[in-house]
Image (cartoon, rainbow, N blue to C red; front, side, top):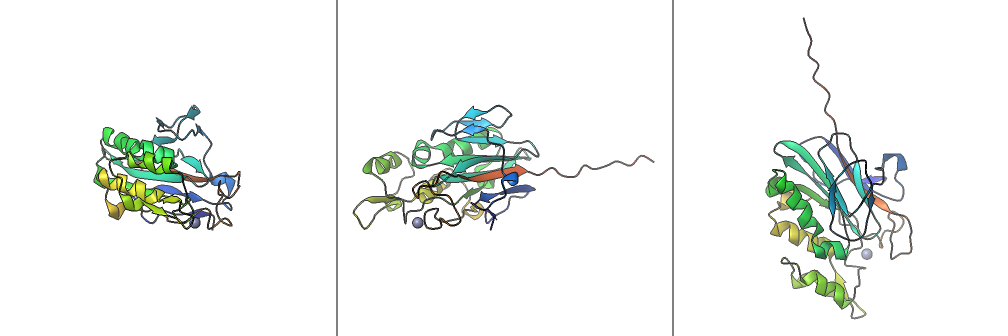
Length: 223
Ligand SMILES: [Zn+2]
């Protein structure tokens, strides 16, 4: 399998998905972001940026983020009737600092409604493998949507964080509709034959990417 699709589709034509080790590189976006585990989100352009997310309303511009254990987040909705898409990179730092909240706020600023926004969290290191230090849980607890069941204790007594769960709690808190959640809950470290995993020692990265597909032009026939 080369590209894993979100399990929902917004009501306008887009291509989107999560790449794997086996994806055809020619389908992947041009790398425009230097990701730094922060919260900066840019309107996509031909200028490379430092940041962890970008969005676009341009037809035919494929945008994405690179990950290997962090969560690739894809967003798609209509803002004042015009397609809007975003790709965000969220590890525990970005998730705790609220990159998803910032992305949703941008959509709202541009005229979107939170309950109309489609969203998908891609393959990442899941709670089965994501052992963390107490400082990670403390950072996540700063979010208003934190619930204690998002952290569990692993067999060695160390906490484990549910990154998808934290992001989903934030999405719900901001009014997103659970029926528009197309997340793919797969673990990059459990499935190293398919995904790159940073904790597994891989230097490669997979992408979460999205593109608004141009509609065919209506051709007026002059008679
Ligand atoms: Zn796992």
